[in-house]
Length: 500
Image (cartoon, rainbow, N blue to C red; front, top):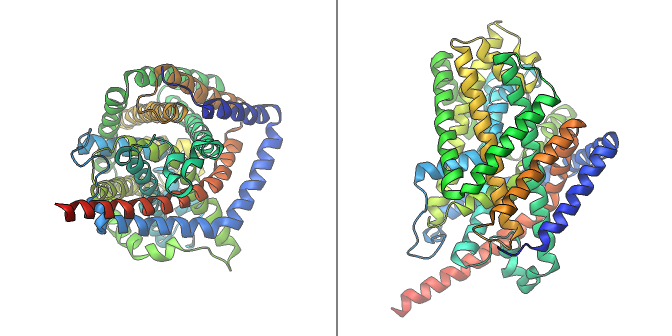
């Protein structure tokens, strides 16, 4: 059995304290975390906008620079997974439940409830709704995941360092990263991962419950959500037990197939021509407005600034909080690829797939709203997609596929997270022991169950966003460390060429 690190015990202690606070003083917990989150959003919004824009520029630089030829591993290493399976894994770990949860609801909200700048229920709001959704789920997010994952993969597979966030900072801090400071960095990463995934488990359970209610009349309530999480926990622990090359690989491929089937149904049965026209027009609008959107802080317009805090800056902080988990998983499945191949795949494939997803689901929902077939805007987020299906042919079949996809994403995210948490708890082991993965699986589910029972998911979400701020500084250090190491590697490669 691999040795368990102190990171495991320290993080468990912090989780117990945070969950205990959430249970014993849930109102206070939510009030305190909401106030801190609001302060972070208003005071550091400009910083988040700058940071993710810099990461996008940096990711493009890695693609076009000589660094792009460096392989993530030894020169003779080749990818463990096929390109299709690899993209399926990126898609499943990076977005997962979120795309089903927000695919129709977010564009609809930007159109009918609270547009960024346009008047509600107008053509301008329609166009803006898709553009903003592309922005929130597109290039910036994947550039951030890609650069952090690149740093982890380079040090792990090229330099033979353990698969830990702290190990990527050795070019700057040296041996200090093997002591208390390194433990602090890794604890922050594990804490963010455990709570980030627990939050998604909670939201996933709520949406599966909504789907079962629509399909079979199952009651919406905490008891049903408990049962859903319990069943999913057993399933993802079974998958985690089989390992990366079986469980997660097969689940990711299943996710991709189910997602494409659901997407095809929506495109064919929805307003097909309008979907393709809106996708084409919105991609152009997204790219044309990318620079302006990337740096928009609305300093002189309080209403627009409030929208940015609620949406864009919230998303940037949310994605940063997910970076330790998603980036570590992406790094783990990317051994053997060149930096150029890696960054092109991570940046473009999920971005294009997400953009078309939002075009299909968002356009269909908004079209139903515009034609007066249903008032989807009044529905809760988890119900929007099912009410949308209700107004389409084959609604039962499509809804059933959606519930299966949510469950599959649910299992994959939790499965991937137990793998990453296991790595982080065993000194970066590439094959964490099953008992550690099971413990983390149970802990994640327990957090979700406990906080669902006291309506604590909002406070938990606030906590993760607050944790994103210190981790963003670690990300900056990782970038400096990576560039320093890559420059040294290029000089080493050049010396070898010259000596031949």
